[in-house]
Length: 377
Image 1 (cartoon, helix red, strand yellow):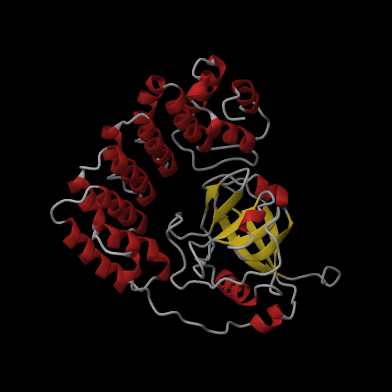
Image 2: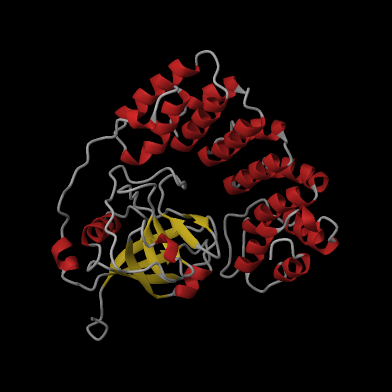
């Protein structure tokens, strides 16, 4: 569909918002002369309410405007510029994050520097990543960000400083590396490696915390095929609804036992689906709403014979044995993931709710449910 302006125009008017958002992400400058597309994008941006924290089922809140401003920046930069600046002060942090992406597309470094000092870590990360490419000499800004306590910000700043090292960078990066080592959080490896890079050191010098291997409760029962199910309830502010996941303890008993323990401890309640790619996966369960913030102690891979087909639930990792307790649900068959990512569950009810999840939607609760005798395997 990319580059096919007629198909994109049709998809932007689809009844399904996931289809519309995916089409928006595929809009390029090749359709710059297509006025209906530009009109649609401008309309979504200009109709964004000041309070966009809630959405109805099958509808959107901030998502349409946020995706549209990035698409308009690619399509018609002059049209986008004033809208980018306006959205950079919006109350919803995701809107400001997308404003940073749009500012990067039009090389608006003034807005990016403003957003690099935002109150939200993910907004800061997005702006700093863009500035690291556009203005790598912004060393003072990056050094300030390097001293932050938030993993996404520090990682982005360290990567930016590696591109254009200057006086004091190596010493600052080394000092921060030692601080992040002391945090003893396995899932912050990306931050530590980025700091090593800024200091001119190799990733092999990382000092991760020691691994702990404990036998969780119910692991034996799960391994023997116990039918354990979790109900994922979505917040009413995110359209509501729920779906049920059956844990595949028969193929990943240790991982499932730890997931079950986290659900019982209410670890996932109130977290979000921070990554949504409507022709790929939804991913969530990060305390920091980020790829780079996860459980402090890694979950080990348990690669089995269950393929990554539509409706299976996998564990997010960033390398072998680096499960960070973030879930992803396959929205289509993704067999290329089979060799690297553990499948630990299967959606057995409510796949329509999964299909309608949008970026930023909030998980109200994840709870174990009683399996009716007639449903037990």
